[in-house]
Length: 127
Length: 418
Image (cartoon, rainbow over the protein chains, first blue to last red):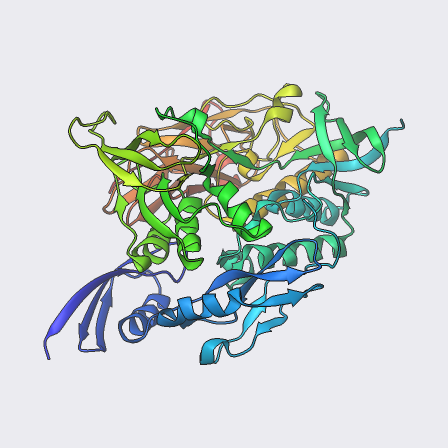
Protein backbone atom coordinates (compact mmCIF):
# COMPACT_ATOMS: atom_id res chain seq x y z
CA UNK A 1 0.00 0.00 0.00
CA UNK A 2 1.47 3.36 -0.90
CA UNK A 3 1.67 6.39 1.36
CA UNK A 4 -0.45 9.39 0.60
CA UNK A 5 -0.27 12.93 1.95
CA UNK A 6 -3.61 14.62 2.58
CA UNK A 7 -4.15 18.24 3.49
CA UNK A 8 -6.97 19.08 5.84
CA UNK A 9 -7.99 21.78 8.28
CA UNK A 10 -8.52 20.68 11.86
CA UNK A 11 -11.97 21.74 13.08
CA UNK A 12 -11.21 20.90 16.71
CA UNK A 13 -11.03 24.55 17.79
CA UNK A 14 -11.24 28.06 16.29
CA UNK A 15 -7.51 28.10 15.42
CA UNK A 16 -8.16 25.77 12.44
CA UNK A 17 -4.65 24.35 11.91
CA UNK A 18 -3.59 23.42 8.37
CA UNK A 19 -2.65 19.76 8.62
CA UNK A 20 -0.42 17.66 6.41
CA UNK A 21 -1.57 14.14 7.13
CA UNK A 22 0.39 11.12 5.89
CA UNK A 23 -1.61 7.89 5.62
CA UNK A 24 -1.18 4.36 4.34
CA UNK A 25 -4.58 2.97 3.44
CA UNK A 26 -6.60 4.05 6.49
CA UNK A 27 -3.67 4.00 8.87
CA UNK A 28 -2.39 7.31 10.19
CA UNK A 29 1.39 7.64 9.84
CA UNK A 30 2.02 11.26 10.78
CA UNK A 31 0.45 14.66 11.28
CA UNK A 32 2.28 17.93 10.68
CA UNK A 33 1.22 21.54 11.12
CA UNK A 34 -0.81 21.03 14.28
CA UNK A 35 -0.53 23.29 17.30
CA UNK A 36 -2.03 20.75 19.72
CA UNK A 37 -2.72 17.01 20.11
CA UNK A 38 -6.44 17.34 19.32
CA UNK A 39 -5.46 17.50 15.65
CA UNK A 40 -3.97 14.00 15.75
CA UNK A 41 -7.24 12.58 17.04
CA UNK A 42 -9.12 14.65 14.47
CA UNK A 43 -6.94 13.35 11.62
CA UNK A 44 -7.28 9.75 12.77
CA UNK A 45 -11.06 9.94 12.77
CA UNK A 46 -11.19 12.01 9.60
CA UNK A 47 -9.34 9.44 7.46
CA UNK A 48 -11.44 6.49 8.61
CA UNK A 49 -14.93 7.64 9.60
CA UNK A 50 -15.36 11.42 9.79
CA UNK A 51 -17.70 12.71 12.49
CA UNK A 52 -19.32 16.05 13.25
CA UNK A 53 -21.53 17.48 15.96
CA UNK A 54 -24.93 18.14 14.38
CA UNK A 55 -27.02 21.16 15.39
CA UNK A 56 -30.48 22.02 14.12
CA UNK A 57 -33.91 23.00 15.41
CA UNK A 58 -37.00 20.94 16.23
CA UNK A 59 -40.63 22.05 15.90
CA UNK A 60 -42.28 22.89 19.21
CA UNK A 61 -46.00 23.10 19.95
CA UNK A 62 -47.30 25.65 22.43
CA UNK A 63 -43.94 27.30 23.09
CA UNK A 64 -42.77 30.92 23.19
CA UNK A 65 -40.88 30.10 19.98
CA UNK A 66 -42.05 27.78 17.17
CA UNK A 67 -38.72 25.93 17.17
CA UNK A 68 -36.15 24.90 19.77
CA UNK A 69 -32.43 24.47 19.04
CA UNK A 70 -31.03 20.94 19.47
CA UNK A 71 -27.73 19.16 18.87
CA UNK A 72 -26.25 15.72 18.93
CA UNK A 73 -24.85 15.01 22.40
CA UNK A 74 -21.59 13.95 20.79
CA UNK A 75 -20.19 13.66 17.27
CA UNK A 76 -22.13 11.55 14.76
CA UNK A 77 -20.90 10.01 11.50
CA UNK A 78 -20.78 12.65 8.80
CA UNK A 79 -22.45 10.20 6.43
CA UNK A 80 -25.56 10.09 8.67
CA UNK A 81 -26.09 13.86 9.08
CA UNK A 82 -28.83 14.13 6.46
CA UNK A 83 -30.65 11.05 7.76
CA UNK A 84 -30.66 12.56 11.23
CA UNK A 85 -31.75 15.95 9.88
CA UNK A 86 -34.77 14.35 8.15
CA UNK A 87 -35.64 12.38 11.28
CA UNK A 88 -35.55 15.48 13.52
CA UNK A 89 -37.61 17.41 10.95
CA UNK A 90 -40.49 14.91 11.47
CA UNK A 91 -40.75 15.59 15.20
CA UNK A 92 -42.98 18.02 17.09
CA UNK A 93 -42.07 18.45 20.76
CA UNK A 94 -44.59 19.91 23.24
CA UNK A 95 -43.44 22.92 25.31
CA UNK A 96 -41.98 23.40 27.85
CA UNK A 97 -38.57 22.13 26.77
CA UNK A 98 -35.65 21.93 29.20
CA UNK A 99 -32.01 22.28 28.23
CA UNK A 100 -30.40 18.84 27.97
CA UNK A 101 -33.76 17.10 27.44
CA UNK A 102 -33.50 14.13 25.06
CA UNK A 103 -35.44 15.01 21.91
CA UNK A 104 -34.54 11.91 19.90
CA UNK A 105 -32.79 8.95 21.54
CA UNK A 106 -30.22 6.99 19.54
CA UNK A 107 -30.72 9.11 16.41
CA UNK A 108 -30.97 6.83 13.34
CA UNK A 109 -29.18 4.06 15.22
CA UNK A 110 -26.04 6.17 15.63
CA UNK A 111 -26.01 5.57 19.37
CA UNK A 112 -26.06 9.34 19.91
CA UNK A 113 -28.99 11.25 21.40
CA UNK A 114 -30.31 14.56 20.09
CA UNK A 115 -30.72 16.95 23.02
CA UNK A 116 -32.28 20.40 23.50
CA UNK A 117 -29.80 23.27 23.86
CA UNK A 118 -32.06 25.80 25.58
CA UNK A 119 -34.99 26.09 27.92
CA UNK A 120 -38.18 27.02 26.12
CA UNK A 121 -41.21 28.01 28.16
CA UNK A 122 -44.78 27.27 27.18
CA UNK A 123 -46.77 30.32 26.14
CA UNK A 124 -47.74 32.52 23.26
CA UNK A 125 -45.19 32.92 20.47
CA UNK A 126 -43.11 35.98 21.23
CA UNK A 127 -42.48 37.78 17.98
CA UNK B 1 -42.59 59.47 35.79
CA UNK B 2 -40.05 58.68 38.51
CA UNK B 3 -36.39 58.08 37.90
CA UNK B 4 -35.00 54.65 38.68
CA UNK B 5 -31.70 55.02 40.54
CA UNK B 6 -29.19 52.16 40.30
CA UNK B 7 -25.45 51.71 40.78
CA UNK B 8 -24.76 50.23 37.34
CA UNK B 9 -26.92 50.23 34.20
CA UNK B 10 -25.96 47.99 31.32
CA UNK B 11 -27.43 48.27 27.83
CA UNK B 12 -27.91 44.86 26.20
CA UNK B 13 -28.19 41.31 27.60
CA UNK B 14 -25.89 39.56 25.15
CA UNK B 15 -22.55 38.01 26.12
CA UNK B 16 -20.92 41.40 26.91
CA UNK B 17 -23.78 42.81 28.96
CA UNK B 18 -24.46 39.69 31.02
CA UNK B 19 -20.78 39.27 31.88
CA UNK B 20 -20.62 42.99 32.72
CA UNK B 21 -23.47 42.48 35.18
CA UNK B 22 -21.64 39.64 36.89
CA UNK B 23 -18.37 41.62 36.92
CA UNK B 24 -20.12 44.59 38.52
CA UNK B 25 -21.84 42.49 41.20
CA UNK B 26 -18.67 40.61 42.05
CA UNK B 27 -16.85 43.93 42.44
CA UNK B 28 -19.39 44.92 45.09
CA UNK B 29 -21.92 47.04 43.19
CA UNK B 30 -25.40 47.29 44.73
CA UNK B 31 -28.19 47.48 42.14
CA UNK B 32 -26.98 46.24 38.77
CA UNK B 33 -29.62 46.56 36.05
CA UNK B 34 -29.37 45.10 32.54
CA UNK B 35 -31.77 46.56 29.97
CA UNK B 36 -32.73 44.27 27.07
CA UNK B 37 -35.10 45.10 24.23
CA UNK B 38 -35.92 41.44 23.40
CA UNK B 39 -38.19 39.33 25.62
CA UNK B 40 -35.37 36.81 25.93
CA UNK B 41 -31.88 37.09 27.41
CA UNK B 42 -28.72 36.07 25.55
CA UNK B 43 -28.68 38.39 22.56
CA UNK B 44 -27.61 37.15 19.16
CA UNK B 45 -26.11 33.93 20.59
CA UNK B 46 -29.64 32.55 21.00
CA UNK B 47 -29.77 32.19 17.21
CA UNK B 48 -26.19 30.87 16.91
CA UNK B 49 -27.29 27.28 17.49
CA UNK B 50 -24.08 25.69 16.13
CA UNK B 51 -21.30 24.45 18.42
CA UNK B 52 -18.09 26.43 18.75
CA UNK B 53 -18.56 28.63 21.82
CA UNK B 54 -16.90 28.55 25.20
CA UNK B 55 -13.75 26.52 24.63
CA UNK B 56 -11.75 29.13 26.57
CA UNK B 57 -14.31 29.84 29.29
CA UNK B 58 -15.72 26.37 29.94
CA UNK B 59 -13.08 24.12 28.30
CA UNK B 60 -15.74 22.53 26.09
CA UNK B 61 -17.50 23.45 22.88
CA UNK B 62 -21.04 24.60 23.44
CA UNK B 63 -23.72 25.96 21.15
CA UNK B 64 -24.60 29.66 21.49
CA UNK B 65 -27.76 29.04 23.58
CA UNK B 66 -25.90 26.64 25.90
CA UNK B 67 -23.06 29.12 26.35
CA UNK B 68 -25.51 31.87 27.28
CA UNK B 69 -27.53 29.55 29.52
CA UNK B 70 -24.46 29.16 31.76
CA UNK B 71 -23.74 32.89 31.87
CA UNK B 72 -27.39 33.78 32.51
CA UNK B 73 -27.56 31.32 35.41
CA UNK B 74 -24.40 32.83 36.87
CA UNK B 75 -25.85 36.34 36.50
CA UNK B 76 -29.02 35.35 38.37
CA UNK B 77 -26.93 33.77 41.12
CA UNK B 78 -24.86 36.94 41.38
CA UNK B 79 -28.03 39.00 41.84
CA UNK B 80 -28.06 40.88 38.55
CA UNK B 81 -31.48 42.40 37.72
CA UNK B 82 -32.85 42.26 34.17
CA UNK B 83 -35.54 44.32 32.49
CA UNK B 84 -36.62 42.69 29.20
CA UNK B 85 -38.89 44.11 26.48
CA UNK B 86 -37.19 47.35 27.40
CA UNK B 87 -35.84 49.79 24.84
CA UNK B 88 -33.23 52.42 25.61
CA UNK B 89 -33.90 55.27 23.20
CA UNK B 90 -31.69 58.05 24.52
CA UNK B 91 -28.53 58.43 26.56
CA UNK B 92 -27.33 61.58 28.29
CA UNK B 93 -23.68 62.57 28.59
CA UNK B 94 -23.50 61.36 32.21
CA UNK B 95 -24.85 57.93 31.22
CA UNK B 96 -28.47 58.49 32.34
CA UNK B 97 -30.85 56.52 30.11
CA UNK B 98 -34.29 57.24 28.65
CA UNK B 99 -36.10 53.96 28.52
CA UNK B 100 -39.49 52.53 27.71
CA UNK B 101 -41.29 49.25 28.19
CA UNK B 102 -44.91 48.02 28.20
CA UNK B 103 -45.16 47.83 32.01
CA UNK B 104 -43.83 51.22 33.08
CA UNK B 105 -44.11 53.33 29.94
CA UNK B 106 -41.37 55.94 29.55
CA UNK B 107 -38.93 56.43 32.41
CA UNK B 108 -35.35 57.39 33.17
CA UNK B 109 -32.68 55.10 34.59
CA UNK B 110 -30.07 57.09 36.50
CA UNK B 111 -26.93 55.04 37.20
CA UNK B 112 -23.62 55.93 38.83
CA UNK B 113 -21.91 54.22 35.89
CA UNK B 114 -23.12 52.78 32.58
CA UNK B 115 -21.81 49.92 30.45
CA UNK B 116 -22.48 49.95 26.70
CA UNK B 117 -23.03 46.39 25.45
CA UNK B 118 -25.22 46.88 22.37
CA UNK B 119 -23.12 44.63 20.11
CA UNK B 120 -22.95 45.17 16.37
CA UNK B 121 -25.15 45.12 13.28
CA UNK B 122 -24.62 43.60 9.85
CA UNK B 123 -23.64 45.73 6.88
CA UNK B 124 -26.74 45.85 4.70
CA UNK B 125 -27.17 45.83 0.92
CA UNK B 126 -27.24 49.64 0.88
CA UNK B 127 -23.62 49.67 2.07
CA UNK B 128 -22.20 47.81 -0.92
CA UNK B 129 -23.75 49.23 -4.11
CA UNK B 130 -25.00 46.28 -6.14
CA UNK B 131 -26.78 47.28 -9.38
CA UNK B 132 -30.04 45.68 -10.44
CA UNK B 133 -33.44 45.25 -8.88
CA UNK B 134 -34.47 45.03 -5.24
CA UNK B 135 -36.77 42.01 -5.34
CA UNK B 136 -37.70 39.88 -2.33
CA UNK B 137 -35.12 37.30 -1.33
CA UNK B 138 -32.18 39.49 -0.30
CA UNK B 139 -31.24 39.16 3.37
CA UNK B 140 -28.25 39.60 5.61
CA UNK B 141 -26.93 36.24 6.78
CA UNK B 142 -27.93 37.02 10.36
CA UNK B 143 -31.51 37.78 9.34
CA UNK B 144 -31.68 34.46 7.54
CA UNK B 145 -30.22 32.83 10.65
CA UNK B 146 -33.01 34.32 12.73
CA UNK B 147 -35.66 33.13 10.23
CA UNK B 148 -34.38 29.56 10.32
CA UNK B 149 -33.24 29.14 13.93
CA UNK B 150 -35.73 31.29 15.88
CA UNK B 151 -38.80 31.76 13.70
CA UNK B 152 -38.68 28.35 12.04
CA UNK B 153 -38.90 29.00 8.32
CA UNK B 154 -36.56 28.98 5.35
CA UNK B 155 -35.61 32.16 3.46
CA UNK B 156 -35.46 30.25 0.15
CA UNK B 157 -34.46 27.03 -1.56
CA UNK B 158 -31.50 28.07 -3.69
CA UNK B 159 -29.03 30.57 -2.26
CA UNK B 160 -25.98 32.56 -3.24
CA UNK B 161 -23.86 33.96 -0.42
CA UNK B 162 -21.97 37.20 -0.94
CA UNK B 163 -19.05 37.63 1.44
CA UNK B 164 -17.25 35.04 3.52
CA UNK B 165 -17.90 36.30 7.06
CA UNK B 166 -18.46 33.52 9.59
CA UNK B 167 -22.23 33.95 9.76
CA UNK B 168 -22.45 33.48 5.98
CA UNK B 169 -20.37 30.30 6.13
CA UNK B 170 -22.40 28.95 9.05
CA UNK B 171 -25.64 29.73 7.21
CA UNK B 172 -24.43 27.99 4.05
CA UNK B 173 -24.18 24.74 6.02
CA UNK B 174 -27.41 25.42 7.88
CA UNK B 175 -29.36 25.85 4.62
CA UNK B 176 -27.81 22.68 3.16
CA UNK B 177 -28.79 20.72 6.28
CA UNK B 178 -32.35 21.98 5.85
CA UNK B 179 -32.45 20.72 2.27
CA UNK B 180 -31.69 23.92 0.33
CA UNK B 181 -29.00 24.35 -2.32
CA UNK B 182 -26.14 26.78 -1.95
CA UNK B 183 -24.82 27.75 -5.38
CA UNK B 184 -21.66 29.34 -4.06
CA UNK B 185 -19.94 31.72 -1.68
CA UNK B 186 -18.40 34.77 -3.40
CA UNK B 187 -15.80 36.88 -1.59
CA UNK B 188 -14.49 40.18 -2.93
CA UNK B 189 -11.09 40.04 -1.24
CA UNK B 190 -8.27 37.60 -2.08
CA UNK B 191 -8.73 36.05 1.39
CA UNK B 192 -11.60 34.79 3.48
CA UNK B 193 -13.28 36.96 6.09
CA UNK B 194 -14.18 33.95 8.22
CA UNK B 195 -12.34 31.38 10.29
CA UNK B 196 -10.48 28.62 8.41
CA UNK B 197 -12.35 25.90 10.20
CA UNK B 198 -15.68 27.30 9.05
CA UNK B 199 -14.50 27.06 5.45
CA UNK B 200 -13.55 23.45 6.15
CA UNK B 201 -16.63 22.32 8.10
CA UNK B 202 -19.31 24.51 6.51
CA UNK B 203 -18.21 24.86 2.88
CA UNK B 204 -15.72 22.14 1.88
CA UNK B 205 -17.64 19.42 3.77
CA UNK B 206 -20.64 19.95 1.48
CA UNK B 207 -18.84 20.67 -1.77
CA UNK B 208 -20.09 24.25 -1.89
CA UNK B 209 -18.14 26.28 -4.49
CA UNK B 210 -16.06 29.01 -2.84
CA UNK B 211 -14.69 31.89 -4.92
CA UNK B 212 -12.26 34.59 -3.80
CA UNK B 213 -11.89 37.87 -5.77
CA UNK B 214 -15.49 37.79 -6.97
CA UNK B 215 -18.31 40.30 -6.71
CA UNK B 216 -22.04 40.17 -7.32
CA UNK B 217 -22.44 42.81 -10.02
CA UNK B 218 -26.16 42.56 -10.74
CA UNK B 219 -29.28 41.27 -9.03
CA UNK B 220 -31.92 39.82 -11.36
CA UNK B 221 -35.65 39.39 -10.77
CA UNK B 222 -38.65 41.67 -10.36
CA UNK B 223 -40.76 40.31 -7.50
CA UNK B 224 -38.37 37.62 -6.30
CA UNK B 225 -34.64 37.13 -6.85
CA UNK B 226 -34.13 34.98 -9.97
CA UNK B 227 -30.37 35.06 -10.06
CA UNK B 228 -27.26 37.17 -9.76
CA UNK B 229 -24.42 38.08 -12.09
CA UNK B 230 -21.03 37.36 -10.54
CA UNK B 231 -17.79 38.80 -11.88
CA UNK B 232 -14.13 38.38 -11.06
CA UNK B 233 -12.33 41.44 -9.72
CA UNK B 234 -8.73 42.56 -10.22
CA UNK B 235 -6.16 43.75 -7.66
CA UNK B 236 -7.93 47.09 -7.38
CA UNK B 237 -11.23 45.24 -6.75
CA UNK B 238 -12.59 46.38 -10.13
CA UNK B 239 -14.69 43.96 -12.21
CA UNK B 240 -12.75 42.18 -14.96
CA UNK B 241 -14.61 42.56 -18.27
CA UNK B 242 -15.64 39.30 -19.88
CA UNK B 243 -15.72 37.26 -16.66
CA UNK B 244 -19.42 37.82 -15.89
CA UNK B 245 -21.65 34.82 -15.45
CA UNK B 246 -25.23 34.27 -14.37
CA UNK B 247 -25.92 32.19 -11.26
CA UNK B 248 -29.57 31.23 -10.80
CA UNK B 249 -30.90 31.52 -7.25
CA UNK B 250 -33.97 32.67 -5.31
CA UNK B 251 -32.07 34.03 -2.32
CA UNK B 252 -29.03 36.26 -1.87
CA UNK B 253 -27.46 36.31 1.59
CA UNK B 254 -25.03 39.04 2.57
CA UNK B 255 -22.11 38.30 4.89
CA UNK B 256 -20.16 41.47 4.19
CA UNK B 257 -19.10 42.70 7.59
CA UNK B 258 -20.30 43.89 10.97
CA UNK B 259 -20.42 47.40 12.36
CA UNK B 260 -20.47 48.29 16.08
CA UNK B 261 -23.88 49.74 17.02
CA UNK B 262 -23.25 53.14 18.62
CA UNK B 263 -26.32 55.27 17.99
CA UNK B 264 -26.81 55.77 21.75
CA UNK B 265 -23.09 56.32 22.38
CA UNK B 266 -23.07 59.17 19.86
CA UNK B 267 -26.11 60.80 21.52
CA UNK B 268 -24.17 60.89 24.79
CA UNK B 269 -21.17 62.49 23.11
CA UNK B 270 -18.95 59.43 23.50
CA UNK B 271 -16.06 59.81 21.01
CA UNK B 272 -16.29 57.17 18.28
CA UNK B 273 -13.16 56.00 16.50
CA UNK B 274 -13.41 56.50 12.71
CA UNK B 275 -11.82 53.13 11.87
CA UNK B 276 -13.27 50.76 14.49
CA UNK B 277 -16.64 52.58 14.60
CA UNK B 278 -16.55 51.82 18.33
CA UNK B 279 -15.96 54.08 21.34
CA UNK B 280 -12.45 55.40 21.92
CA UNK B 281 -11.39 53.69 25.15
CA UNK B 282 -8.56 53.22 27.62
CA UNK B 283 -7.42 49.92 29.13
CA UNK B 284 -10.16 50.20 31.79
CA UNK B 285 -12.79 49.98 29.02
CA UNK B 286 -13.72 53.54 29.91
CA UNK B 287 -14.94 55.78 27.08
CA UNK B 288 -14.29 59.52 26.74
CA UNK B 289 -17.28 60.09 29.04
CA UNK B 290 -15.83 59.03 32.39
CA UNK B 291 -18.93 57.30 33.81
CA UNK B 292 -19.58 55.38 30.57
CA UNK B 293 -17.79 52.08 29.92
CA UNK B 294 -18.07 49.76 26.91
CA UNK B 295 -17.41 46.12 26.09
CA UNK B 296 -17.69 43.54 23.33
CA UNK B 297 -18.74 44.02 19.72
CA UNK B 298 -19.98 47.55 20.38
CA UNK B 299 -16.26 48.42 20.69
CA UNK B 300 -14.57 46.20 18.10
CA UNK B 301 -15.94 43.12 16.35
CA UNK B 302 -14.49 39.97 17.90
CA UNK B 303 -14.12 36.46 16.43
CA UNK B 304 -14.96 34.66 19.67
CA UNK B 305 -17.74 35.14 22.21
CA UNK B 306 -15.29 34.12 24.95
CA UNK B 307 -13.33 37.37 24.45
CA UNK B 308 -16.55 39.38 24.47
CA UNK B 309 -17.57 37.84 27.81
CA UNK B 310 -14.11 38.41 29.24
CA UNK B 311 -14.13 42.07 28.21
CA UNK B 312 -17.68 42.51 29.50
CA UNK B 313 -16.72 41.10 32.88
CA UNK B 314 -13.74 43.49 33.18
CA UNK B 315 -15.78 46.50 32.01
CA UNK B 316 -18.50 45.71 34.55
CA UNK B 317 -15.96 45.39 37.33
CA UNK B 318 -14.33 48.72 36.41
CA UNK B 319 -17.72 50.42 36.19
CA UNK B 320 -18.47 49.19 39.73
CA UNK B 321 -15.13 50.49 41.00
CA UNK B 322 -15.78 53.83 39.30
CA UNK B 323 -19.25 54.04 40.87
CA UNK B 324 -17.70 53.38 44.28
CA UNK B 325 -15.05 56.05 43.67
CA UNK B 326 -12.25 53.51 43.86
CA UNK B 327 -11.10 53.27 40.23
CA UNK B 328 -7.67 54.89 40.53
CA UNK B 329 -5.96 55.99 37.38
CA UNK B 330 -3.18 58.48 36.64
CA UNK B 331 -3.38 61.46 34.31
CA UNK B 332 -0.84 59.91 31.98
CA UNK B 333 -1.90 59.11 28.43
CA UNK B 334 0.08 56.78 26.19
CA UNK B 335 -1.26 56.67 22.66
CA UNK B 336 -1.37 53.31 20.86
CA UNK B 337 -0.40 53.48 17.19
CA UNK B 338 -0.97 50.82 14.55
CA UNK B 339 1.99 49.95 12.33
CA UNK B 340 1.93 49.26 8.59
CA UNK B 341 -0.01 46.02 8.70
CA UNK B 342 -2.54 47.03 11.37
CA UNK B 343 -6.05 47.75 10.10
CA UNK B 344 -7.77 48.46 13.39
CA UNK B 345 -7.18 48.11 17.11
CA UNK B 346 -8.64 48.86 20.52
CA UNK B 347 -8.06 50.49 22.97
CA UNK B 348 -6.49 53.54 21.32
CA UNK B 349 -4.80 54.96 24.41
CA UNK B 350 -3.84 53.66 27.84
CA UNK B 351 -2.81 55.21 31.13
CA UNK B 352 0.02 52.74 31.58
CA UNK B 353 -0.94 52.05 35.20
CA UNK B 354 -2.15 48.44 34.91
CA UNK B 355 -2.07 45.40 32.65
CA UNK B 356 -3.56 46.14 29.24
CA UNK B 357 -4.70 43.98 26.32
CA UNK B 358 -4.65 45.50 22.83
CA UNK B 359 -6.78 43.69 20.25
CA UNK B 360 -6.01 44.27 16.59
CA UNK B 361 -6.65 43.00 13.08
CA UNK B 362 -4.06 42.97 10.30
CA UNK B 363 -4.71 44.62 6.95
CA UNK B 364 -3.12 41.82 4.89
CA UNK B 365 -2.44 38.17 5.65
CA UNK B 366 1.10 36.90 6.24
CA UNK B 367 1.11 33.17 5.51
CA UNK B 368 4.50 32.42 7.07
CA UNK B 369 6.27 32.71 10.37
CA UNK B 370 5.79 36.20 11.70
CA UNK B 371 5.98 38.20 14.87
CA UNK B 372 3.29 40.23 16.59
CA UNK B 373 4.85 42.91 18.75
CA UNK B 374 4.72 46.21 20.61
CA UNK B 375 7.75 48.47 20.55
CA UNK B 376 9.91 49.46 23.56
CA UNK B 377 10.34 45.68 24.00
CA UNK B 378 6.94 45.47 25.71
CA UNK B 379 5.63 42.42 23.86
CA UNK B 380 6.62 39.96 21.19
CA UNK B 381 5.01 36.71 20.12
CA UNK B 382 5.80 34.42 17.20
CA UNK B 383 2.87 33.30 15.08
CA UNK B 384 2.69 30.80 12.23
CA UNK B 385 0.57 33.29 10.29
CA UNK B 386 -1.62 36.34 10.76
CA UNK B 387 -4.88 36.80 8.89
CA UNK B 388 -7.39 39.65 8.62
CA UNK B 389 -10.19 37.27 9.66
CA UNK B 390 -8.54 36.43 12.98
CA UNK B 391 -8.07 38.88 15.84
CA UNK B 392 -4.61 39.24 17.37
CA UNK B 393 -3.87 40.30 20.90
CA UNK B 394 -0.99 42.06 22.53
CA UNK B 395 -0.63 41.77 26.29
CA UNK B 396 1.18 44.58 28.06
CA UNK B 397 2.27 44.02 31.65
CA UNK B 398 1.47 46.80 34.12
CA UNK B 399 4.96 46.60 35.67
CA UNK B 400 6.62 47.13 32.26
CA UNK B 401 4.32 50.04 31.46
CA UNK B 402 4.93 51.74 34.80
CA UNK B 403 8.69 51.38 34.19
CA UNK B 404 8.49 53.29 30.88
CA UNK B 405 10.27 56.67 30.99
CA UNK B 406 7.96 59.69 31.15
CA UNK B 407 9.20 60.71 27.69
CA UNK B 408 7.42 57.72 26.11
CA UNK B 409 4.05 58.91 24.87
CA UNK B 410 3.28 56.35 22.16
CA UNK B 411 3.42 52.58 21.79
CA UNK B 412 3.41 51.18 18.27
CA UNK B 413 2.03 47.71 17.58
CA UNK B 414 2.43 45.68 14.40
CA UNK B 415 2.76 42.26 12.76
CA UNK B 416 5.55 41.51 10.33
CA UNK B 417 7.51 38.60 8.84
CA UNK B 418 9.86 37.07 11.38
